[in-house]
Image (tube, rainbow, N blue to C red; front, side):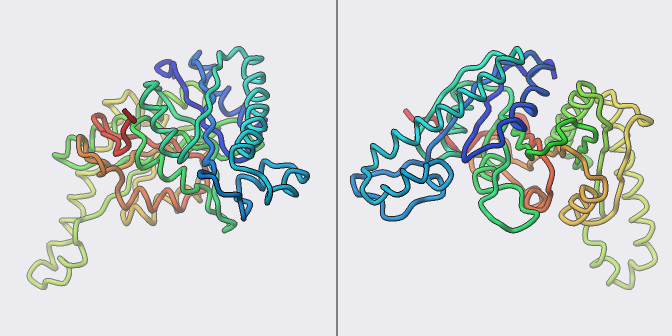
Length: 331
């Protein structure tokens, strides 16, 4: 991962410090990258007193402070939160420095995903890393609303990692979408494959490549009697076309077929990518989010959104070249 020189590490809530440090070290040390530790508070605003303790307070305030919550002014509350978070950031920073990583620290107030993206834009980072944080107690849901917003709108690669005691990357899965005569989609597939190659080469992990294909409107075609006998041949032709596209993509990206474990499957991406993830159990899934370059607001496809809501492993989400975030820097 030699191309990664600047990493933005966003933290919120109460991260598992040891897992976070180890995950970031695994990336930053290989790349000799600098890390900016960034914390955002979705802080209370206005002059009114707090009447309900938000989740942030439950995580960060001590019992003695919670007992005083009804009588605390927002500015005093903000100061307490800032002090507690700063102490945690210093601990994380100290651990990273001990591992030979250069670290700077920043704090901000506002909507977390907006402030994180604005910092990414202003700092021109190579990679955004963040511990996955779900706000729901539903089992199997790994990514929360901030994670999903970053997947959708951050123009830089977003690595949302699952805090786990098993810190070594042993299996990396790359999901690619290829289509004849679609240069943008194929270019994004190349970019995803390059990330997969870079990561696995750096950490010595196994690389799995999954490509889901189908014949467009196959069921409709099979419903027309005059086409019935020819549909099987159309399916076979489509299969061979997609297999050729996949092999060409591997060659373009200097990936040897014998060193890649292939998952070439016919069906729906929304169903088969999560199913393959459950079967293979990769430590990291790398995938492109389907975008429309140059058009703010067109930033993720329904397929990518559905897949991200179903998988339960760390994800590195890649945007196409030329992607424009709907989030803008403030004047």
